[in-house]
Image (cartoon, rainbow, N blue to C red; front, side):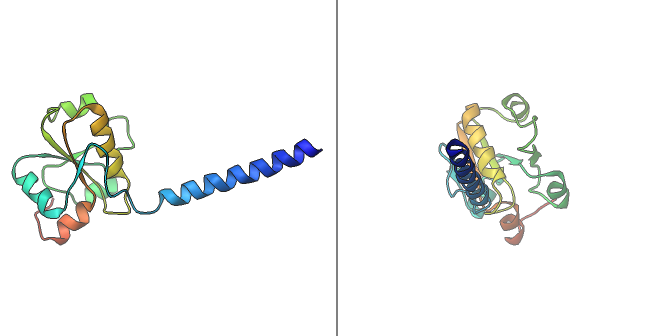
Length: 141
């Protein structure tokens, strides 16, 4: 009986930890990603003008609502977000920017992290994402 009570207590503690972890993940995205440079809207525009590859990590409905012109749509939560697929569009040493829907969206950070892990050397994390691009009055599709 004593062991059962301890198991019930442990289960409750573990449930609380999981709940807190899930809640914490819904907060703001990280400000930085190891191995990537966090950029603002002006830096994003300069990279875009210089031909950098923008990867839109958002879901289909967000992509269809508007995007940075010429961006690739590779949903971070799908299998197609992989090194071989991305290398069809850009090289390991070319500038590549991961973006999504601003500070509350974690997809851009996840994308930047994966790009670094894949071995890309010029990874940019555009944390402010598409909303800041559009609000700045920059062109969009």
